[in-house]
Length: 359
Ligand code: NAD
Image (cartoon, rainbow, N blue to C red; front, top):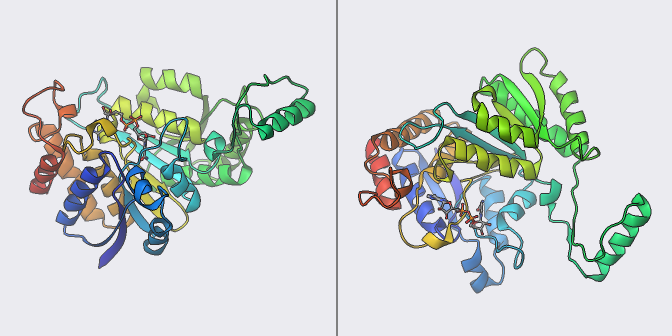
């Protein structure tokens, strides 16, 4: 069987990582018919949009995509293409496993955590009102009237919607993942003591869903600030965590850090019948075109894609090959060497070659 898969090259270090990942995935023997698409800052200059409609059309048609990172200018410019893809295609679940690999420098040797992040709403919904604009002033007046609370007139406003529907979907996804992957516990994480009507609703719905898994999967709740501290102190007591969008974003970087850094952290965005696989890290623009950064995170996202396609044997072989190359510590990128300026570090493409040789 040949799989039609959209390959989005991204920008910054994206194209180098996409090419390394494509070569490694092909070397597993699984057959792919790649539909190569471009999105991000480079295509913005040519086509006037960072996300040309043909990119989304291609993913809708193929149903599976692997995507290299894409830059989002901070505070100004276009909105995140990554967020747009997740929203446009209703990829409601973001799945980010963090696992310690032998050979990766980390303060911990026992990390095996999974972050399940809601992907479509919360402060990430992009509903924002700029400071000083007429609509913002109108909104501030209306909120003051309705809530009886004062808001400084020179405020910008970001809206945080959390719905019953989206929460039920993401919590069910987390429990189903836990069952399918023989995990023991799901922890729901929010700041419900402060945001009672959004994060409080998330807990309320999560408790209802958890009842359906009673006796199979344990359910517990933690506040996000306490969770950050506990993960640093005793990560081994946690398993699968389910969170609203923003906390999920932050906590998945924390978990990536516990396991040894962004260079090895894979991810998937999953909807009803479409999935887009991508690394947790961004486009690291300062390393663009240098054949320098670690391809592992995108390659392990490829392993998740192989499992999604039910190519389990190829996924296991590739995961083992990556682990072997990293454990040997010879043909690895700078971030996996004892010192970042180690002259024996290899480039992105050479690390991919070593993984192919280990397959
Ligand atoms: P980043 O993840 O791009 O890089 C932060 C630092 O982490 C890098 O400077 C580098 O030192 C290290 N790093 C990241 N990936 C690495 C790799 N593969 N190998 C070795 N080291 C690696 O984060 P940033 O600098 O905050 O963001 C850069 C851009 O990427 C921003 O525009 C941001 O919005 C975007 N971004 C995109 C995605 C995505 O495409 N899904 C995710 C996060 C950030």
